[in-house]
Length: 334
Image 1 (cartoon, rainbow, N blue to C red):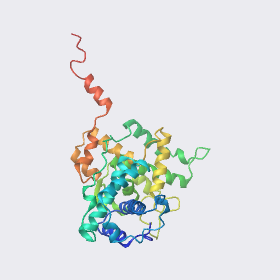
Image 2 (cartoon, helix red, strand yellow; image 1 turned 60 degrees about the vertical axis):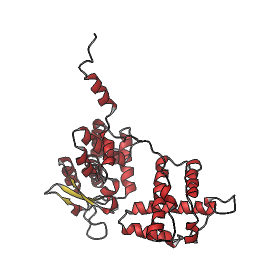
Image 3 (cartoon, helix red, strand yellow; image 1 turned 120 degrees about the vertical axis):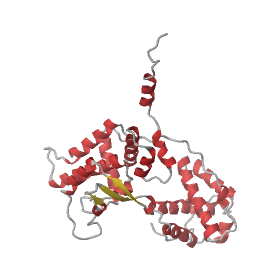
Image 4 (cartoon, one colour; image 1 turned 180 degrees about the vertical axis):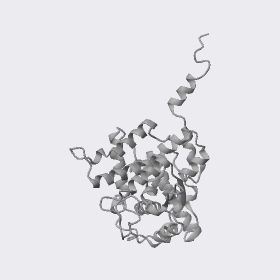
């Protein structure tokens, strides 16, 4: 995404966040959220009652005076617009509220082009806590079996060509890393071969905020990686020569391709409503259910806040039922 057509103050804000090592995804979200917000402000401040966001061709003319005239009531008007006209969920509105808060905080305390921060008192929508969806151990094993079989790539005669064997080995390695390490999609895609130290069974990934963290590889991961690397095409030059996971065109695999590939396997298991991120939830939940301490889980997942990790301390309905059944009074008839 480019900064063409943006006001200079918004470009400055995006550059400021880039300097803080915010991820490209976060900066793109700020850009999208704030462009929509500023377009709405132009509509709100216009005398033309029939004007809509879609009618706004540019926001490049927005200046310090325009921003200084925005007040808290305007911000709540926008949040109501997101709920009633755009049908945004509370989670989506909370993210956009955070973008607005960050923008006005920058304008007030860093750029110093406004005299007060109207977003300081903006309250976020209340978000109900949702337990993460995850695969059971049996479903996880089935997913791994389907990925390893290569059925997706088999021809009618049931054989795999050499090219398809490479893809099957790649897909199995990706699925194994997701389910064993709980890594994020962006982390998996960005792995380079030299990030792996097989003698120490460790992998370095780049997490949120461009922060490095070490992932310890178990035997399933090292075996899957070795099997894939044994058939992975060698690339002598170019920006993707060191990329671990490659597309058929020998380019670093994209986020979208990984999502589509995993989605195909999940559909084969009858789990079409799940996604790559649900595999991260699955890894975390299975580890916690098998005795991994929540602090250790925090390190594994790369969470800054322990509160984010504590969502995995939920107990599923089966465990609750089993706990009741195991009560020593369960069979007492009186």
